[in-house]
Length: 328
Image 1 (tube, rainbow, N blue to C red):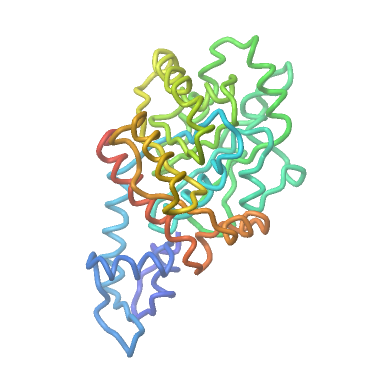
Image 2: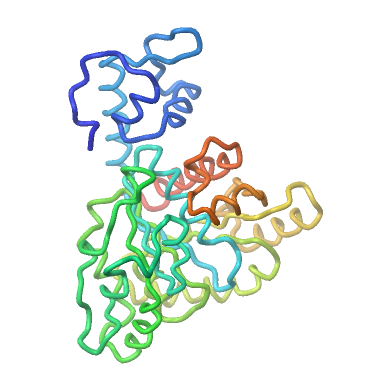
């Protein structure tokens, strides 16, 4: 990464961010929190000295070493905005200095689309890693991972329609529930966070996603999304018996909410009854700008729009929860 270059001159926030592989907004947030303020200012402009950049590099590198987790985003109900949460959470973590891999494990390939990767434009995908033909897997996970153009810390294992065929092949495969878990073994040490965008069902693909995960994150958009959550959590218990490591409930996040309405309050109350203290404080509101960013294949977190703020807040909660319940 460019951050290894020796810095010999003062830099603006934008220049320092490029060197460090984070966003300028991340540096501004760190400054506002008092984590590390730039040594100089010219008017409203922050100026970072070479020593500032060195200290920031150590801080960000230390943060990466302390946190490492594989998180599956799951909900058997479709339309809860799970994919939107996955790509924007991944983007927010990347801009905060973490190295992030998003695994699109849904045959619809919506996560890949949202990151400007079209399934009909790729030569290989996660389907080739799982194996969608009788001959079995034809690629390793390392061979299909690609860097996302929006940020140097963000990577994608794209999906393809062939993943639906791979799920059918899994039914007769030995160790069928462990295919993704074992595929991830070759890359886990390369990333601080691996986010798995699971399909909206409790089939073999979702079971693979849960078995591979250290923790589950459950997006919820309404009462219907809560109906199957207890079944989902029971399925987690079964997956934990198959997995080679514990599978924690990282938490649930309310998504696409109309803030301060009787309905949103009722939904949160119901969710808290199920998740208790594992309910994230961050609430992601329903916003046209977020839907628009998805349609244009550019995650909202890579814009300067205020609608991106809840995803940065969620990223901070996620890192704290990972440190608390998973550790390293």
